[in-house]
Length: 209
Image 1 (cartoon, rainbow, N blue to C red):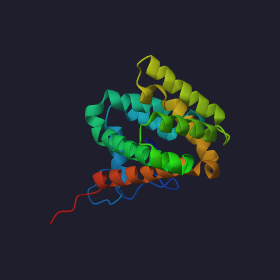
Image 2 (spheres, rainbow, N blue to C red):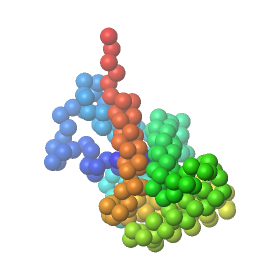
Image 3 (cartoon, rainbow, N blue to C red):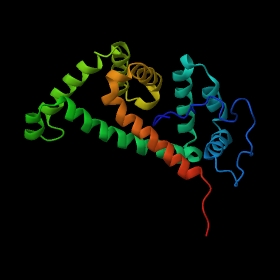
Image 4 (tube, rainbow, N blue to C red):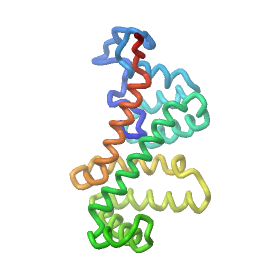
């Protein structure tokens, strides 16, 4: 599960090998936090959007991810525990991704002689990073995402909502070429693992003395 991916690896988290779970959702004696997470997602106003994402075919995931994100933002009071954890993990992954990308693509002289945010540093980093992103088989998706970001910025739109579908296609492409895109995927995958741990901690039964 990535930092922004709420679709379980098993497209039907209520069953395994088409068998019913041994304990009911919400049963405090269960140690399977994923069932409580599913119960929570289905308990809000975005149940239909979430189930559409769970049971959709792969090609439709970007569309349903975008619809679910819009719905959760519209009902943020209920979904705040999920949204806040996503935002925290995204912020952490972006910081780590920036550090990793700078270490890979910037010459040591630039790293030593400039500070973060320096115009020359940013220009060199953007040029080298874009060249790398266009060289791994995902040039079309990368260009589409960049254009979407620019258009959202120009029109003062919410980038996360407007570009959710395009971003999902970009991630899918990088996953398909994971050997090449490992420097980009590594911090994102780490954030995904962190997000799942945060969900597990939130939905697991609380221990009492």
